[in-house]
Length: 147
Image (cartoon, rainbow, N blue to C red; front, side, top):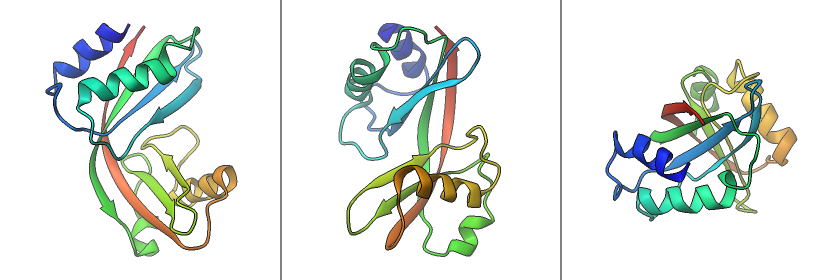
């Protein structure tokens, strides 16, 4: 499986590129099992894929589809009015609590997220992030394939 993932990614990107990645794993009913990755890395893509694969993917037994989101265009959004007008189908959000350094991410086109208000509410509910936060948006290129 690791070689299949690398072959797919490296047909589009160089294995030495330092690109941020998220892996999302889905079961036979296309329900999300888990999603994990990084927005910041100093690792080459080849090494990052190895780390994420061994940390999350190889431990799962009922995966039928893997989606890899390659992060592009990260932008700080200090103005909440500009953020609210963006489409969660096209943009993900990254929230950093400046006091605690706690973070949360919602990828673009996440099931059940139809507005940025919903995305922010989900982050607050799941991760308890509020107060002095920094919000960034990002786009991704998604590559998905059956296992």
